[in-house]
Length: 375
Picture (spheres, rainbow, N blue to C red):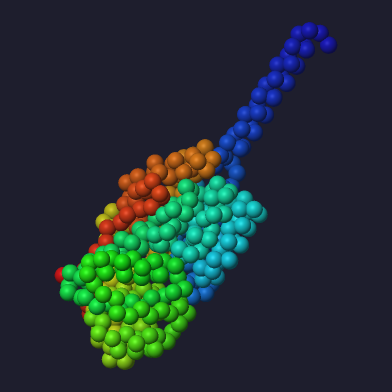
């Protein structure tokens, strides 16, 4: 082998080595590659809250479909069986250790989201909670985001409304099995008493309860002039129906925005008339209308409550993943960048330094089976 041949062979080998290094870098540099990106989703897909979990899961799938990256994304969904924290923890561990997901969306409830957060923080993964409203999620970690406003906003809104309308003695009726609903009770209690109101009785129940007569009788036997109730739609509908049967005419005010769903009217019928509740203002942007139409086209039904927040969580995460270099810190940086005055399905989103969002609240009521703003 002569010197020229050796030189040529050496150059060929060098080119192959450089090419191999480049190829490996391309394959491992981040989401923008030929490899499928795995996103974990933890939601209640069975049990009492399955209706909401399925709606959010559908919305996340729709976000993948509309993102432009559907062939590069794999959604791996796990069931926490009604926001059970131990099941959410097991799901997170599986998604991280076995499935090797890049980020996690979930869960529906504050308690299960708080249970997941230490695990995602330890593994330095983004966690986006689309529907967890408890204010204690604010300090859950540096990689925790959410696309729904904190409970504190709506609780303060209804407390102010009630006091302005002349209510002074309140009964608190709340679901003690859901952290977010307990948080709402605490917030509305604090806000109302600071204004000068008085709490005359507190009664609790759990999500699966479908008989609240004993609690309602205790409330009826007080001089409360307003009832703040913190409950999911199924339990709220039961409470309103039973209150009418018992002759309890005290004004009900829900601390939960999901009171503004058709399910409440379907379950309570005319007993739902005059129910008051907080509600995020309906977005006026085209993204909201497009989401409603796309969801109905894809699934044949109206989107469930919280589905829009699930869609935004999915879309923001996907956009940030493919704008980043693949590291969690860079995904986080892109979330703050893209999630700044972002026009989404649930309205305009701007993440604050804690990954929280604020959305304007209005006070609504049910009149003749319709949801309308109070006058």
